[in-house]
Image (cartoon, rainbow, N blue to C red; front, side):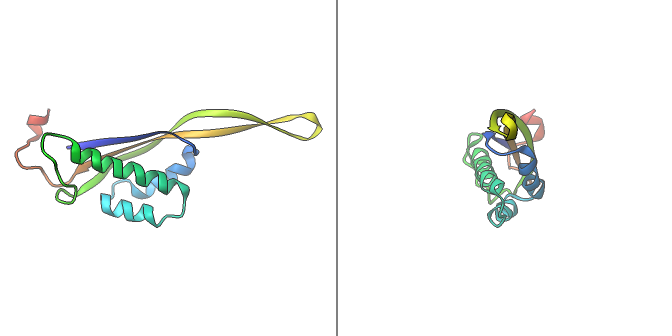
Length: 126
């Protein structure tokens, strides 16, 4: 079983966010949260919220309430896409103007359980 959490229009460039996302891709959820807590980049605070949201989405999915610690959740996929760009102008010498691009990004985190849930088969979910 897997669950998705998305963060849209995060006010940061996708390039800066991808540096931190590459560190947590494929790791267990507990290890990823520890990495994010001790990373000094601003992207880590945004990603920590998205990973915890994905964990809560996984726990609330389905009929029964599952516990994340029992099923060894892992980050299956994590990717960052570019969002919209706000274009502003700043004065430059000799009466000219320089364009300032304020970039945004969209983050998608997918978590899945490594331990199989009792009573569910892959055939039943299909």
